[in-house]
Amino acid sequence: MPTTGTPQTVTLHGQEVAYQHIPGSGTPILLVHGIGASSTSWDAVVGLLADRGVELIAVDLPGHGRSSKGRGDYSLGAMASTLRDLLDHLGVQRCVLVGHSLGGGVALQFAYQFPQRIERLVLVASGGLGPETSPLLRAASLPGSELVLPLIANRRTLSAMTWVGDTLARVGARPQFLSEDSVATLREFADPQARGAFLATLRSVVDISGQRVSAVSKLPVAAHLPVLLVWGDRDLIIPMEHGRQASELLPDGTLVVFPGAGHEPHRFDPQRFADLIVAFSE
Image (tube, rainbow, N blue to C red; front, side, top):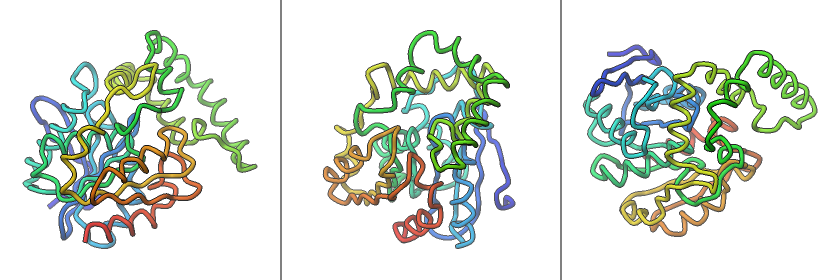
């Protein structure tokens, strides 16, 4: 049986998929990160849930983290199929699916394609529930961003961003795009394959007008599921109103707001988030 927290990889249809599988009890919880991130974005939550004996799977989506990058299919449907293949590999029939941002869009697509494989659904600042999104993401989807990202990802620029971010943090004014995690994501874009995979993924869901893929019309397929929506009230990437509107369309949907949190409420208050997940999964 795998050592708790040990990173592993599996080849699924010729594609390397990285993941962590932490054995435990109850219905397994599958954690799916957002765009430009990886399974490590769940580390604080994973530690808290593992301490409670919960079975966990945290995956690096294709094109992210330690999973295969380069040319490929980065659509929501392809990523949902990858999750299904990973569950098959692990012998998991049903899961509690937790998706953040892009991962929320993948989770919604998974619920549409494989409804029999999901027991409960958690959407964290989820994509796919409305057109609005950050101007930075819309701009990054434009032609020519392939030329701009390498300039941003060079060592001198990142050092300057880190210095400015740290300086502003001392007075409590650090903007989200200068956070340590945002700078770490940009650092990965020095790798052409990681950069290409990010842009291919982004352009599959975002264009200059905003989010181009909507799951709102598909929400009825989740009507039989308990759905928990979690949002930060200071989210500058995807507005909290998307979560409010979705919760009203779902018969068994509940919105929980994290005051003061931005786009990553699970990292803003991992203890509260872990408590929510445990209570919701019981």
